[in-house]
Length: 153
Image 1 (cartoon, rainbow, N blue to C red):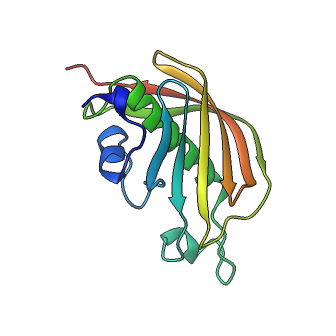
Image 2: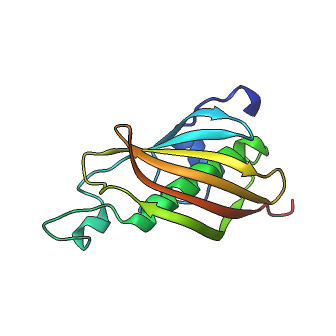
């Protein structure tokens, strides 16, 4: 695969890059990929997801920590493509989250756009800025760091 030519990732490619699976794979696709720089993850929020059974009965709200996790998964796809980690069984680990602010509720029916920008990276440790948007409205913003671990061949 020529990662340099990739500008979007479908569910199949996402799963070849990051280890997350249902029910914790929180992105449906990634678009607008600019290697080493930025991309936009897409999460279609639906009522039949398991978290809505308890968060909250009668008033389903997508949990804020899951919005942050979805931003992190989106950044994992960006790094995976940027560092040629497709099919390499790489693991991604959070190292820190800073400056989190929630601005609006995210509910079933919303399409969450996860805009992530690499602030620092190139090796195992990367830093990102993320913004989660719904219909052009800011839902959440955060800065976060992650470490990427690739098993030895």
